[in-house]
Amino acid sequence: MRDEFMITRQGKQYVLFAGLLDEAHARGLKGIDTDLVQVPTGENGNVAVVKATVEMEDGRTFSGIGDASPDNVGRGIIPHIIRMAETRAKARALRDAVNVGATALEELSDGDDAPAPQAPPQPRGLQSVPRSGARERPAAEAGRGRRARPQRQGRPGAGRGRRGVPESPPRGRL
Image 1 (cartoon, rainbow, N blue to C red):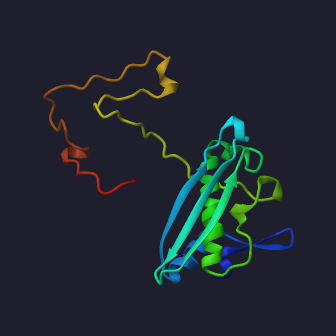
Image 2: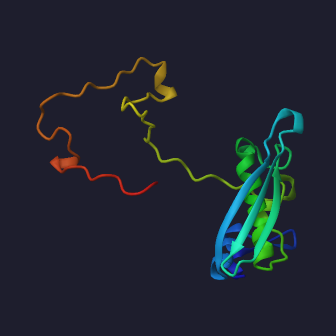
Image 3: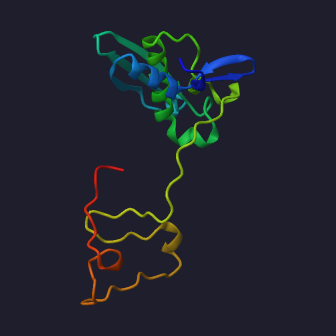
């Protein structure tokens, strides 16, 4: 495991999930499959449980279980506890696959001095567009009485991108 993927907290060494994934790819990772074992509900304390199975190119498989609840994640992660449970399960399975004994930092509960994983910031100005093609107004605009500018028909360059250049079709997925 490369040093850049190791971190020390309170005198104990932890591995980062990114390092486990990197090492697994270097050793022939074929795939990772996850199953949601328990859906978080009020009756089970909002605990999400996920099982991950790692398959290597040589046919060996490794599995791990991960859980997450509002009690063991940071406040900002609570809406995403299923994904956190999945990350923890994958980290455990990957640790076995690449023979790393150090706990993954992402496996720690928020109270264990682990920084909460942060989602990448959303790009500004992007809005979802319904399939019908009509523009949805953001919630912030909904009650302000703002109106979308009507598009003029027949103006030069209509239906084109900047400076009259046709827009290229979108490539791949974001």
